[in-house]
Image 1 (spheres, rainbow, N blue to C red):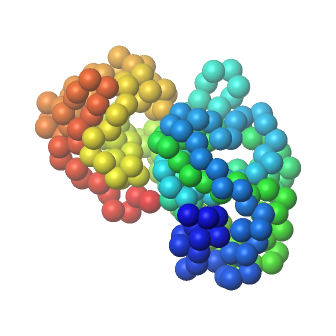
Image 2 (cartoon, rainbow, N blue to C red):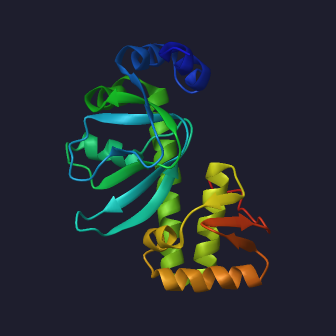
Length: 219
C-alpha cells in the first residue's frame, strides 16, 4: 500500500481531512526489523514515529548502561514523551526499540509541533495518549513501591501478552530483569513460583501464560 492509502486506512476516523493530508505530505513511510532502535538517548529528536504496525518498547536510559522499561507503543500510537522533548527542544532521554518487525510514519518534529495550534483532533489524540501512558507509569511506580515482585512480574507478562496479542512470550530472563530493574536470579525464582502456581509454563526463552488474567483496563 502507498503512504496515503495507509494513512486513510488507519487514521481517517482519528484525524480530520486536512491533517491526513499533512501527514501524507510530510511523513515518510519506514520499516524496521525487531531490535532496531528508532529513537536513541542523547540524540536530537528530528522526527516522531507514528506506529502503523508492530510493537515498540519505550525505555528510559541514563547513558551509563542503566535503563528501565516504561511502556509499549502499538498500532496507531506514538510516544507522548518524545513529543514533549521535541516541543521543549530537548535531546531524547528515552529509547524506542522495535520488538517486532514494524512499519511507521516518520513525521518531522517541527511539523508535529505546529499541529497543536492547527488541529483539534491532533490535540485530542496527543492528550489521550499522554493520559494513558502517564497512568501506566504512575501504576508502575505504585507497583514498585507497594507490590511484591511476583505480582509485578505477572502484570509485566500480562501487559506484554496483551500488546503483542500472544499468550506465548519469547523473552530471556535477563531481559525481564533488565526491564524490571532486578537481578536475573530473582526473576528466575519468581517465574518458577508463578509456574508452580500454574499461572505460567516455562520453556527455553519462552513463557506460556496458562491462566491469562489480563486486566482489561491496560491499554
